Length: 168
Ligand code: S3P
Image 1 (cartoon, rainbow, N blue to C red):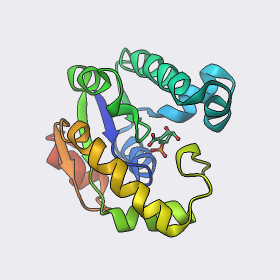
Image 2: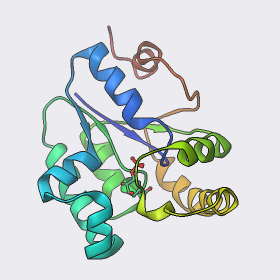
Image 3: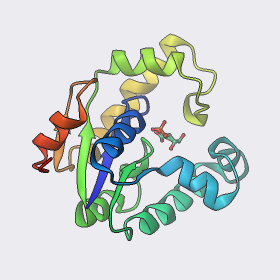
């Protein structure tokens, strides 16, 4: 079984992915960490040296690779569903879940986060809120192609598994 968690930066994909892995025993992969390991380079470093397009190519390759794993829970980067036919690849090879979290919660979390994210680096609170509003509206049509959508920021693994019909 493959489960892909998708949604904007800060929506909690990695946290939920870890918890789902503990609950189900299915291995968890954070796609950004996978890209970093495969390329021996951090995500900010890839953006710096190869630009966003270079990162998206690597992200696509990583997604193709993980989509071949038999059992895996994948937390994808916020932009992953919105490039190439990544969303179709995920929908074809697994169960996709869009974590649709309120933009004000996203902004709050991203301001506090210690993870370096090149797309929002150095933005003030207002700039970040405007950026989220603009990019989220472009990304929503891709996110909405997911098989399932959840909007509770603190959904439990058990509730999520029930929603997607996985027996526990
Ligand atoms: C990105 C989200 C990041 C990471 C990269 C680009 C995006 O992942 O892939 O910085 O385009 O939204 P998270 O969603 O895990 O922060």
